[in-house]
Image (cartoon, rainbow, N blue to C red):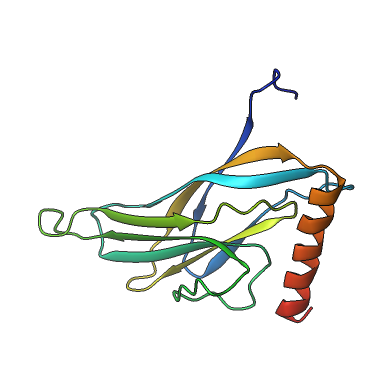
Length: 155
């Protein structure tokens, strides 16, 4: 589907994730000419206020062999991180979200991970990606970054 000239195409993804799971979002194309940039990333617990929840949800450029609640911004494979906390006693501890995402353009699949630090609760996520047409040099740079990230992962 094409947008009128000057408009940006936004793709949305959402899901419900159990504790210590990973979702993959398929974005790759045969020629790598379409890139994406995160424009929105939101999370909310599956049962806000019904449990004491501390969820860490992250978006990576490569699949993760282990899913943890640790956030390491020096990891060049990490695209975004969100921390969602809720409490049974909402008056003392209201819903709290802290979300940070990178402005990097990527052209391969991405992976969403979830880890609940306290009770193993599920979390919902919502992601908006801006679709970007890549020229040959941008395509090459994005693809080489992805290859380097895969080799760093040990595959």
